Amino acid sequence: ILRGRELGFSIEEIRALLAIADGGGGCAEVYALTTQHVDVVKRKIADLRKLERILSNTAARCARDASPDCPIIEALSAPPPAG
Image 1 (cartoon, rainbow, N blue to C red):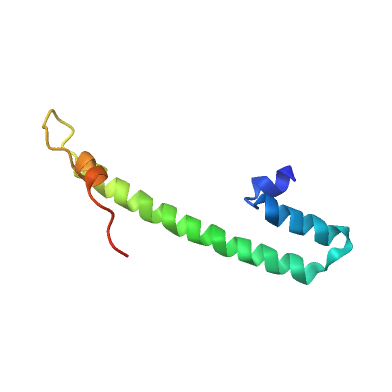
Image 2 (tube, rainbow, N blue to C red):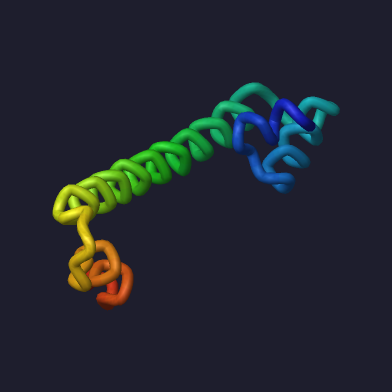
């Protein structure tokens, strides 16, 4: 269970995998669950890369001085972009 959590599987996914391991299915079902999980991981990675770009670009615009105008604060107070 711990290894499954380390790999990012949810408790429900781990329960399903354990049920399969206990004779409730076969390798094809494990493969299907795993590939679905890989898709979720890929989406999370894409979201994190986008977040990194936004934060890096915002931080790069910061003057790093005593100016009251701060692009980081402006970004935090702006409504999220549509889409």
